[in-house]
Length: 86
Image 1 (spheres, rainbow, N blue to C red):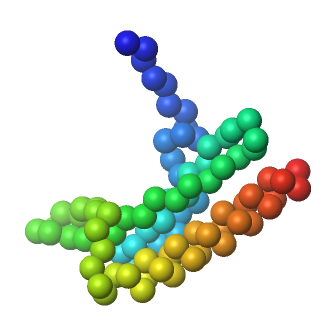
Image 2 (cartoon, rainbow, N blue to C red):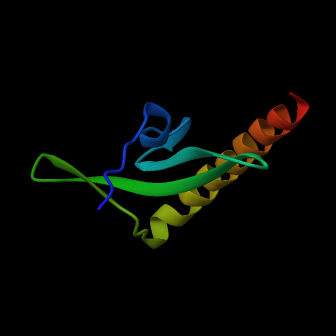
């Protein structure tokens, strides 16, 4: 089995957007057609003093998730436009 190696750019997001306990992590993947960005979303919460994350959202989280997703979309759109202009 081949051992995979990870570089700094593949293990850390290129940008993060936070609003309250909701976070978007934006990842960059270099492809033959130029960079492609993807976003993952998490919600942080605390239980017994320990911080945890989840990808589940309750009704009260959805408006914030929508705003964070909108900001992530805007950031990715700008980053893609800048990459095409280079």
